[in-house]
Amino acid sequence: MPGTLSRVAADAAVRAALRGFVSDAELAGLGEDEPLRSAFDLDSVDFLTFVERLTRTTGVRIDEVDYPRLATIGSCVDFLTAAA
Image (cartoon, rainbow, N blue to C red):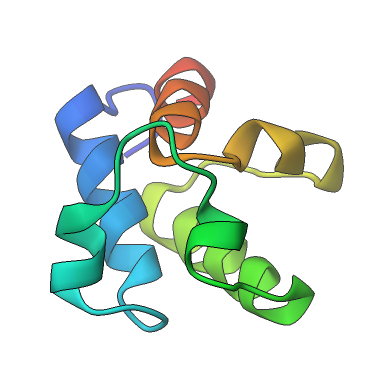
């Protein structure tokens, strides 16, 4: 729910949005500051799907200018908690 997104909830939302592309084991092995797109070989369509899932789950509007702020799990969490 916008306005009340905790870091724990944001992290869970990011990981849930990535689950269609990678396994739980791959997610568990990813450091918070590792680049998502290169770590999981996400192409532009995959990344857009990831963004759409995040928006749907969190209610946070994510514009194309925000995409660079979604580079890592940590930066996604920072963005989502600041925007919520």
